[in-house]
Amino acid sequence: MEPFRYHVFVCTQEKPEGVPCCAASGSGAVLDALRRELGARGLSDEVQVSSSGCLGTCEHGPVMIAYPEGAWYSELKPADVAEIVASHFDRGQPVSRLARTDAPAMKTEILEHRDHYLAMLKAKDAAGVLPDDLNETIRGFMGSRAILTAIELDVFSAIGSGASAAETAAKIKAEARSTEMLLNALVALKLLRKSGETFQNTPVSQRFFTAGSPDNARPAQMHTVNLWKRWSTLTDAVGAGTRVAERGSSEEWTGSFIAAMDHNARGRAEAVVKAAAVNGPRRMLDLGGGSGAYSIAFAASAPELRGEILDLPDVLPITQEHLRRAGVAERITTRAGDMLQAELGKDYDLVLLSAICHMFSLEENRRLLRRIYQALAPNGRVVVQDFILEADKTSPKFAALFALNMLVGTKAGASYSEPEYTEWMREAGFRDIKRVRMPGPSGLMIGVK
Ligand SMILES: C[S@@+](CC[C@H](N)C(=O)[O-])C[C@H]1O[C@@H](n2cnc3c(N)ncnc32)[C@H](O)[C@@H]1O
Image (cartoon, rainbow, N blue to C red):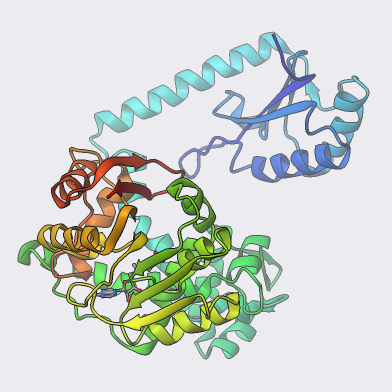
């Protein structure tokens, strides 16, 4: 059974450098062109496109197979795609000029390739060499650092609509020799393109890393630049059992931290409001509300909502600016204070703890949840959003790694598990405690008073 008129597989297999593969010969661009062309011809719902692993004819990549005919297109260029879509997928006539028909030779080639590849892996294993994927993970910091340096120096804005290494170096006030090395590496990382001596942004770097773009993530990613410095202290922090890095407290640190939180909330706030399933809350307390992104989303969903954000004094000017821009400064007020000490108030329908519990120790969270219970009205809810671990604390991967982020950044913070949140809530008196899983790295724990 085939639910679509055609099902197309485009190989996007990556192999170690120096080994021929479809990814290296440009299958990504072919796949993009295919999706674009099908969309332009109104065929996106007729032709299902899947990327696939190795198809075995790696010397002739990029390779694409189209079913039901089983037509093998080889050595494709993005420029070939329009003809295939028009002739094969629109009019039902495969493009013989681009399709291979030498089935017995192909079979031999695929089997030889498989044997050759397996022999290579076996030889590497016998030589006691680290597996490629592990090596790549260990060296992952190189690519990450190159991108962070480019963000820090605002390289993508300096490149603008195109610039040479020397022109870019002059703008970012760096040496031409080193700038050229950085730009070449960014081309290898697919964040720039190079034509002759001119470097250009890709659609991704243009959209996410250049000044003036509405989706510019540079201010938020400056927080990752700052995290790098803390992560460099991980070995010492593991030894000490706590943070050894200095606490970030400059205006720049706070600004990029809150920008990063706001950026994360962008794609999640609406979903969190839905998943929290609170019926039109009237009074809400947002502890450590940061930019106010979640309070703003709750306010948009419940016209009668009045809320308060309690946060540290140096953050509140940023919060107030966000609330003002969202037009909810009358309904959501702010208060400076330390949530571990300050009077929380009472009779709330909803208390939100978004990305808060990981900053604190077990005991601080236990006590905080007890105080939140007291602050809620009957039937009121506490909604915790965080990176929630499974019981054995080894997954999800991001939450397990984030625990280390808290080790290097806080006195006693960590990622906590579902059983831990459940226990704190139960002990505080909450009922109907549940975990809500959501797409992305964080989820919710909800309890009712
Ligand atoms: C990780 S951010 C989360 C921001 C926001 N809730 C969100 O999810 O986007 C933590 C927030 O808690 C605030 N914060 C940290 N310690 C605090 C404390 N002891 N009392 C009040 N706010 C605190 C920080 O200033 C920051 O705004």
